[in-house]
Amino acid sequence: MMDKCEGEGFYSTSFKEKADVYVINGCCVTSRAAYETRLFAKKALQNNKQAKVIVLGCPSYMQREREMLKEIGVHFILGHSYKHEMPDFILRAMNGESGIFADDYSKSYVDESVLCRFGNRARAFCKVEEGCNFHCTFCILPMVRGKERSKSIENVLKEIKCLIESGHKEIVLTGTNIGSYRFGFKKLLQLIEQMDGEFRIRISSIEPVYIDDSLINILKESKRIVKHMHIPLQSGSEKILKLMGRPYKKEDYYNIAWRLNKLGIALGTDIIVGFPTETDEDFKEEEAFVKSLPLQYAHVFVYSKREKTPAASIKGEINGKIAKNRSKIIRRIIALKNYAFRKSLEGKRVELITEPTKVVIDGKAYRKGVSKEYVVVLIPSSVPPHERLWARIVHVNRNFTFAEYEEKA
Ligand code: SF4
Image 1 (cartoon, rainbow, N blue to C red):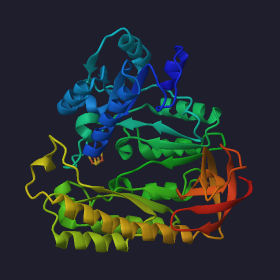
Image 2 (tube, protein in one colour):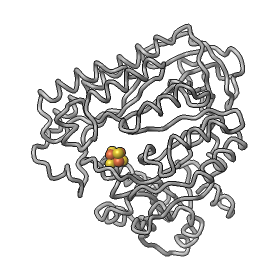
Image 3 (spheres, helix red, strand yellow):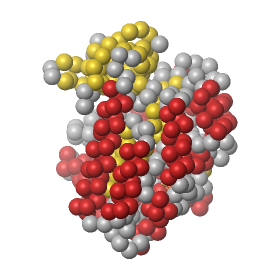
């Protein structure tokens, strides 16, 4: 989108600066994300009262979100498929036009565009699929992103080639439900494996039901796929998993987690607490289950009721304070697991890809790098960005992982 806009003569600036037009990539998957989208729209108009504001993404589908954004003074609210026409919408907004253009999923729009640059980042995201045919009862995504549509294998490979030629060293394959990639996700991985170039592959997130023997074999044999998988668990209570409409049992997840662990693959997950009817007993079961898993990290969410989802009509909402407390308990367990995982890397060599981002800690500047295991590692800031290199982990504390540069990878 940025490429297209810059090609038409627009230039981007930091959000804090006064801009003529603000384009906000919105989200409404959780009530928090929807709130933050509105907050950004408000801030944009506070920065410049005369500015035009365009919100892109799933809020365009939700009647309530659209009304609230209009009230704030947003000029255009657009569905994802309109992002390619952004230069046109910017001009229209500057000419005083406004409107709402939601995606029409009945038309099964497939984004076949081939991206060649992902900003200044070392790691580029390649979206191979959009939409989901699953029916998790808490999830609004199938409604706001529509049914599964996949980019052709040819265009995915073209995009990866182009991103590598632009200097990106890691390609993160993304999608709403990537395992359901229509033309065969495993076949796609095998084709990417055979491509030329110095790059590595990361799978952003994949549902447990897609982890079978043949995928595990691909992960084992691959020279490109990193040693990290993100597999959403969502709940550690059998009853809640069923109510969530998740098509697996705790035991299935447990077996997958430990099989991957034996292959040295670091595991990340998503967990929702406070789902309707989650009793203290259910939560205790969840807590014990989370403790039993070899997790590197987890994104922990408090259940967020989204209108029109089946879970929204389940009676037995959990008190906000109780849900927050449960989230705190799980986060604490995860923090300990994450620390133990990073501590286990102390003294070891890790392969990093360095990002342009620097951080200052106790007056000393560091460059950020991401390891194959998905650990953010800090190395001396003199190391240039966009490098693929070996570094040795020299110190790990509760918050950071420090390393010394060793050699180019
Ligand atoms: S698989 Fe993921 S995107 Fe699809 S419905 Fe379930 S939670 Fe939502």
